[in-house]
Amino acid sequence: MRKIIVLGLAGLAVLYGILCAGLYAAMRQPPERFGAIMTRVPDAAFLILPFRPLWLNARAGYLQVGDAAPDFDLPTLDRSHNIRLSSEYRAKPVVLIFGSYT
Image (cartoon, rainbow, N blue to C red):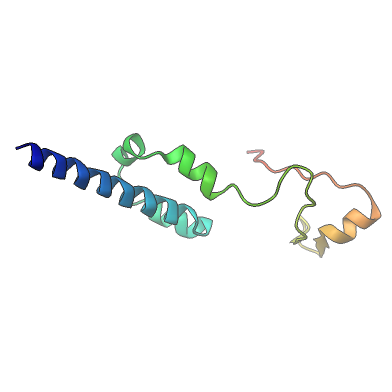
C-alpha cells in the first residue's frame, strides 16, 4: 500500500512539473498566441499552478536598471511617419512610459 501511495505522489509531482513547464512555455510565446492558449486553460489551474512566479520569470527580459533601452521604430499617433528611439535620444532626453491609460 505504501508503494502505491509513493508512486501516486511521484506521478502527481511529475504531472505538476509537466503542467508548470507547459504554462511557462506558453508564457514565452508572443502575446496573441499566449492569449489563444490561455483561453483554453481551466480557471482551477490558476489556483494550483504558480502563475505569478512563472509569469515574472518568463517576461523578465534581460535588461537591468541603467541599461540603454533597445532601439525601436514606431508610427506616430496620426500614422504620418515613424519615430526611431535612437534619433530622438540623440536630439534630446527621452522618457519612456509603459502603461495603459484606458
